[in-house]
Image 1 (cartoon, one colour):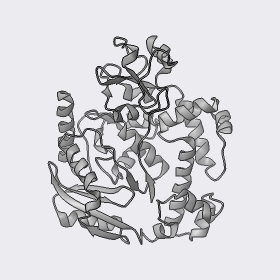
Image 2 (cartoon, rainbow, N blue to C red):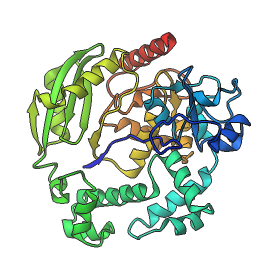
Image 3 (cartoon, one colour):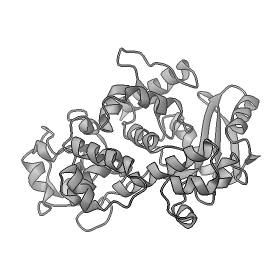
Amino acid sequence: MMQHQLVARSVGTSGTPGTVTSALDPRWAALASRDGKADGTFFYGVTSTGIYCRPSCPSRRPRADRVRFFDTTTDARQAGFRACKRCRPDTVGLAQPGVEAVRRASAYLATHANQQVTLGHLGRVAAMSPHHLQRRFKAIVGLSPREYQAAVRAGKLRSSLRDGHDVTTAIYEAGYGSPSRVYEAAPTGKGMSPSTYRRGGAGMVIGYSTVSSPLGLVLVAATADGVCSVKLGDSDAALVRDLRQEYPAADIQANQQTRTDWVKAILRHLRGAEPSLDLPIDVQATAFQWKVWRALQRIPYGETRAYAEVARAIGQPKAARAVARACATNPVCLVVPCHRVVPAAGGSGGYRWGADRKAKLLATEGKRVGRL
């Protein structure tokens, strides 16, 4: 089980997250000139309006002392800003610079997951300077090149274990070089060894709670490292049975109070009182699934995207069906908002937890945004 907290940090000119900047910041020139070439390289928030934009936004230029710069839209939202409806900064990934270079780099890392790849070499492969590639890769994929390669390698290890290979063979085939490297990288989750993963999570302790919500019952399950499952339904017994099937060898315990804050945050989110869910997650996933899920978390509250739009946003425009599969296999609904992906032809589309629930979720978010 691989643990990732899908959270990024924004660093301002003084090195602290969300630092208030001035016209002395080199990014100010791009903002002031509405330079479209800078779109995707940074975003800015205006403290007087609470809105964040892309550099080329045609809206009135803000005063320098009211501007905060961010590396990603995730950073801006976490700082309390909401997306500009005029320039739609969260769609910048659909046509942002560097997509082809990042695609070449990610393809190379996927086929060389068992090798050490320096950033300099990757820059030559992508035909982009190493420093710029690092920034564009993180902005587009949501992972650094090193993190992406580690996720690919971990995915190969899990696949090999599921195919029945012994642990030692799986470790070397995945490219770790030695068993110690596996435990250092923790590819299947903090404290969970590859052999434990192969046995279906034997030795894991998972606590869960079921609570009532506007969408019926919600089951929230978690390890010590993060939320590992969120399910919606009408029956306690059915939800718990589904959880036990998902983690058949784990020690599953009811009514764990240590995760109360996480449960309360999800309930507030369902009631429209907490638009942004910032919770750690501890789930099994491939590198591609992580890319898709991070992209879903960038979809602004109250907005939707088509499957093809998400595919383009992650630099794989032909992968719309794979994006749909990643949405369908998302084990932590709401925390990863797969309900915000809809068919291009219209309507809300299908949902593992029921089309009516999906429509109600989208309606609640739309009403909340209308009140902001």
